[in-house]
Image (tube, rainbow over all chains, first blue to last red; front, side, top):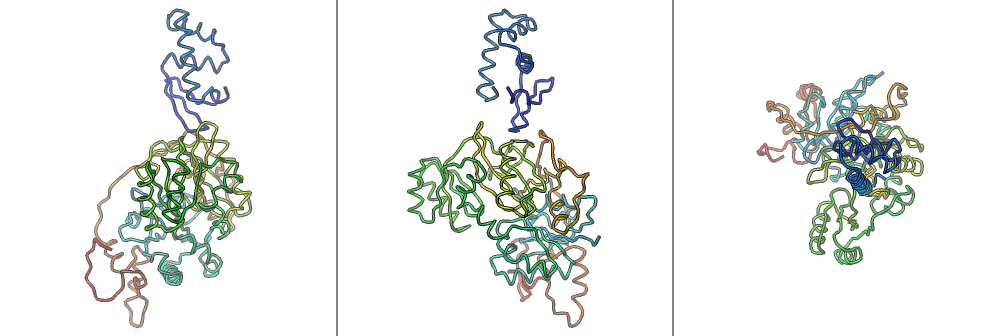
Length: 78
Length: 386
C-alpha cells in the first residue's frame, strides 16, 4: 500500500512511481479503483463505487476490481 | 576569485558519448564560477571541439598508453598555453595516470579531485563481491576470468545466457559458449584483462551519480531510471527516481570507502532485489541530468577541491519524475577548427594567440609535436584519417 500511496497520479490516468522511476497508464475505471485503494476502501466498497460510477452490475464491478488488483500484484504495487 | 580554467576530457559527444560535455555545461551554468573550458580531446573529430559555446579551447592529447611522461608534458603544454588551473578527467582509461600523479599535478598548479589508487582498486570489477556486501546489495553470479578455458568453465557453471564484460568498457550478452568466447576475444583485444562473466538478471536499470568528499561524506547525488537505451546500452531517455536502497548504498559507499571524486553506481532492480552491476570511478555521460534538476555536481566538486564554500542556496536534493532526453543535432561550420586541430593539435582563442607567439624566432615550442600522429615531419595526410 505504501507504494500505491507514493505514486504521483494525475487526473488523466498517468501514474509515476518515484521510487523506481516506473510509469503506468490507467483507464478511467482503473483510475477510480486506484484512487479508492489510496483512500483505503475495501474490495466491496471499490466494487460499489465502480458500479455507481460506470453503471455496471455489482458482479461485473467486483470481477473488474479483482482483475485490477491482480494487475497491481503483477507490477508489485500491492 | 581567479578565473577558473578547467581542462575537461571526454568531449566526444557521439553515440557512445563521453561525459565531458555534460560536465563542461554544468560548470558554465554555475553562476558563481567564472569558468573557461579547455577541451582535452584524443581525436580531431570529437564533436566537443566544435561546440564553441561549451568548449572555449581544445587540445589534442596523446593516449595515456603512450607513457606518463609524454602525457604529463602535453598537459603542461596546455597549461602554458591557456593558464589551465584545474582538470576533470572523465574517462576510465585516464584514471590511473591522474590518481598516480595527483599530488605532483597539484604541485604544478593542476589539481584534480580523484580517488586514491587504493579506493579505485577496491571498487574494481574484480572486487564486486566484497563491494556488494559492503553496500548491502545483491550481486549476480559473477566470475573473473583471464583465459578462454576459464571462460568456458565459468559459462558452464553460471549457465547461458551470460554477460561478458571488459575490464574498462563494454558488455555483451552471449546466448552460447561460442558466442561468449567470441566476445571474450574481442574484449581482451580491445581492453585487456580481466574479463567478467556474469549471470543475466532481469529488471530495471537504475543508476546514481554522486560525488564523494573524500572524508566519508556526499557532495550530492541523483538517481535515474533508464527508460530508453541505445544498442550500446547508453541512456537516451531517463527519469529521476529516488530508490531508497540505491541512495542508501551510495551513502554507504562514501562512508565505507571515503571516496573522493565522482562515481556512478549501476544496479538492476527487480522488485525488492537490487543487484549491483558496477561502480564507475568518474562522472557518467548523463551527469547533466543532475545539474538540470538543481544538483550541480561538477561545480560542487570543483568548489570543494579548491576550498570554496558550496552555496547554501544550491540544492543538494532533487525531485523524482524529471525527464532526461538526449537528442541529435547537427551544425555546419567552416574548416578552421578542424585544420587547426590537424596541423597544430589545438584550436580556440588561446591556441590562436599561442600560434602567433610561436612564429617568433627562437620559439621552439611545437604546438602539436607531442601528439602521436600529428608531428611536424614533412608528410601528407588525408584530413579524414587523423
